[in-house]
Image 1 (cartoon, helix red, strand yellow):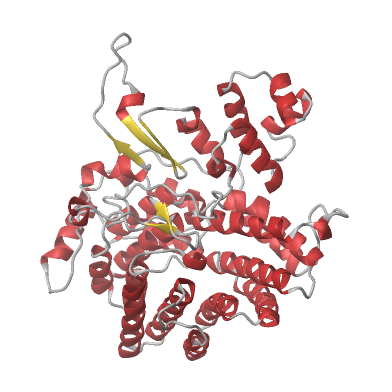
Image 2: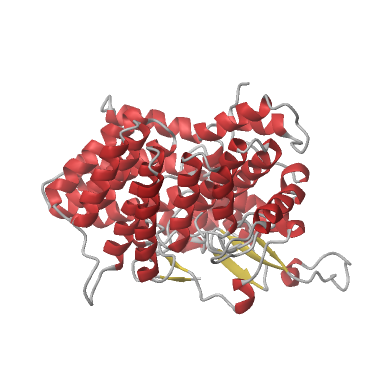
Length: 523
């Protein structure tokens, strides 16, 4: 995996085998964990499995081929996913054979302070401190919930859960067998029924996040204010924004709950007419709005979006305005103002430069995403022809872009257009077409957990609409494996689980009640 100039993940050119690869159901469980299995070998003396030669592990985007390290351990992965950075620090220290005193001397802490950090009695939330500790103890930044230095989100590359089991890439033509193959593949996938479920978090991170944002946006209560808040350098503010967006795209809500409210506090304290500050402020509030939309807190989302647009308008940059408009369009859709949503999206798209020899990939990506948003709004309004027209125009932009990218955190490209076609077909009540679109998504193209989760939740919605509860449930459990904190926080998942609990039969839904409990279903 490489990175675009704009900081987003750029997929490596697929081999001929990858282009035609299809996901085998019996390999689904291992791939869902981001694990790429190689040939297993026995240790010559102990007889145990030699993990060094057996696996290439992916740890939040850190791939170590041929050698197992401390950050390959499940404990490290689990601690990072839950935002327990002190536990990650302890693993790094013990792996380096350092005592608390030795490590404290290296970091400039007393042994007691370092112990409090490791045990969680003193929280590790400051981005600057986390980056310094990552450097001192050679911790991959992603394990501290930080972006890589180039600002791209660190994600697992495992390709095989990006595609409906039993499906294969498809281009053109009408193949009625595709849907049947997809149904058979999903029915035989062992992940949902046999694999142990991820452990639920001790505290619901999304609730903590929403409460903190509500205090900031409505009550103007700042968490832990200090006199230095207004002195935060703009570069630190922008890096904090990158880290927050990375947490969102990688569906790490616990880490996001620790960072985003503090970032808003810094931004509010430092608010000045300076265009760079206003641009950062717009994107910070825009990120808040995006999170609240995902968690279906629209009233609070409107507050954040209004503040984001006020700052964006002060700057006058069409990129920032377009970025904020995307979320305003989503809020309009949730309020069933579909005509306004389409008009706002198209007006913002018109301000972007997408022609000429030096066209900007950020402009083109935002343009395509705005057309996707408008196409989805048209589908929700019941206008099939208009939706198709807009999504076809978005597809043309994606073809011009040339590949799936992540310019300005849009994740735009041909695959994202297909994801919107799935959503549009569902909105039009055409579940079969939604599943057909899902079957065309090639393995390995969905690299961002938030997009992976959207894909599988939309597949689940289509199967529920199609009255296929077992397949709906299996798609939801795959989504939960890929993005547990997000899936357990989303009301749409809760609603689907409620419906599954009242389904006429529970055949093929082993573990449903435990899943329903994890996502907060009440039926």
